[in-house]
Length: 84
Image (cartoon, rainbow, N blue to C red; front, side):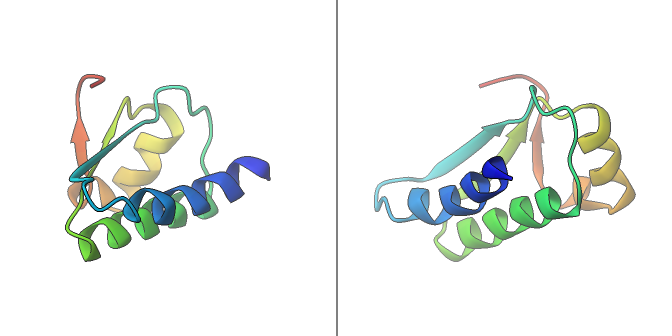
């Protein structure tokens, strides 16, 4: 539950930095994601676009990869093959 709160609060905190141009989220240690986690990532992506900040994921695998493919969000998110 704590992780969800942090994930939801982090994008707005990051977007408050005027010089920030790009955010890459390393999800390589994520073992499981549910609809709340997917919704938080979509919210972060939308907030980034609104603030002209590029948003990408790296280390996508397992349950998260399957969820993104199932929802076709793998075509919406920029997904990097390697950690940055």
